Image (cartoon, rainbow, N blue to C red; front, top):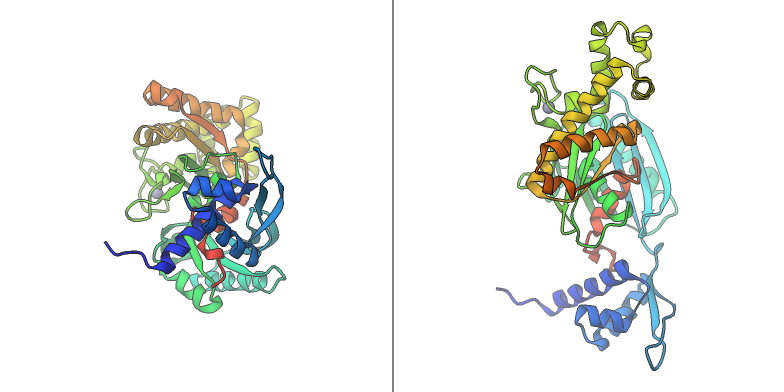
Length: 396
Ligand SMILES: [Zn+2]
């Protein structure tokens, strides 16, 4: 094993101190020394540097436990900024975000029927606009993209609706802006967003976030780290075939979960099943069917709405039962457009999950809606850059 150089040890210790301030502030120097095992002298020296770099400040005094009251330290939330970019289906969103996840500025850019090249130009345009703003310094750009991503290499392996294949997105952006980049799948980004800024999740805990909008994907956090699998595709539950002779999916297979349980699939199925439900109120106005109109009809016990919504809940519940059985992660969050169907729909999913999985596993699993809505994508894309490692924030 190679011995760490002095410089590496110093960086490691600085990261450790900053991590504790990030996760536990307000906190005293003595408390940091106790938690990290570093000497008080080392902690004081590092804290002095962090104050000098503007990342940390003294924010008052704590309670004395005999002797002098300790000085408490806090993070300076606006000392650095990150950009979070979400490449949504028909709109790109870019936000400037501070170190506590406060969104300072957002630019939305509609994109429709763009070629792969045009989509890339749109990414540049939105970044140009954000970087030209007054929020400085920007220390990182996190991008949430649909499709399969190699995060380590910064390559979008395949994003069908953006027409990107093996696109070295991180390299292209880094060459243009000279700012560190992180690229990850959108569902994985949403998972990090909910983990860091959504409901309070204990540090280093486990979480699965299932994102249901035009597609379906899951993001998995294990011990507070994103789990991407060997090929980056962990959580691609939307493209598992669950129905024999089902509808054709955009991945080329037929009967994928996504063709029954996504928000778009529910609408599409309602339209195609309409001839079988002439008594449905929805049949009077087929052009205006949307996820919202289906919800309203469902609340009035419309049989067609009941059919497509309960099918979606059933197959999603089965998929979640599989996840619960493989991972035994007890905290599961659902995000995306589909959450507009509300708590009764969540109960249906929960019932199927409970019936399909081992009772002991299912009964200890909590299923709930996300707290952030679509902001989870941009927040998560940026937060990924600081997940347990804060070296990005140090002045070089
Ligand atoms: Zn598919």
